[in-house]
Length: 126
Image (cartoon, rainbow, N blue to C red; front, side, top):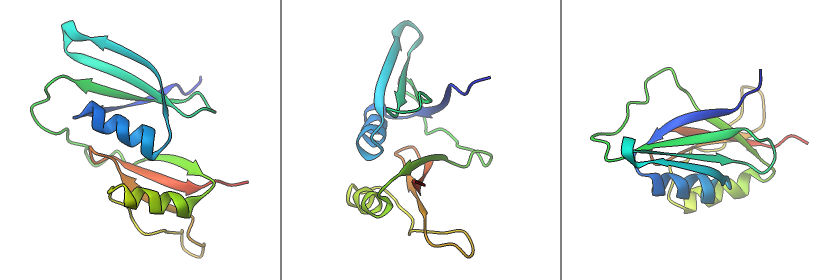
């Protein structure tokens, strides 16, 4: 088995693409439009691993999606945690303070995407 992608449903495709491309540096690797079925799939990835995030945009959703209480977050790593923390706050996204597990120095924080999904940003380990 090989992990391929994770799918999340988004209300505003352009806002979500702005977040995942500009705030997280992901790149669009493919797009599939199905106008006859009223949805678009956009696949994003980092330049390294090949694992993808699928954004599913259903045309004209009536109300925001319920994220439920079982899903927690997506996680990505960065070599410069503090700079990205400042960048995400400056971009106007909701960010938590830098955090660490009990007894550990701060090494992560969370940023919230336009649909309310949490993304954990971790300090990249060398």
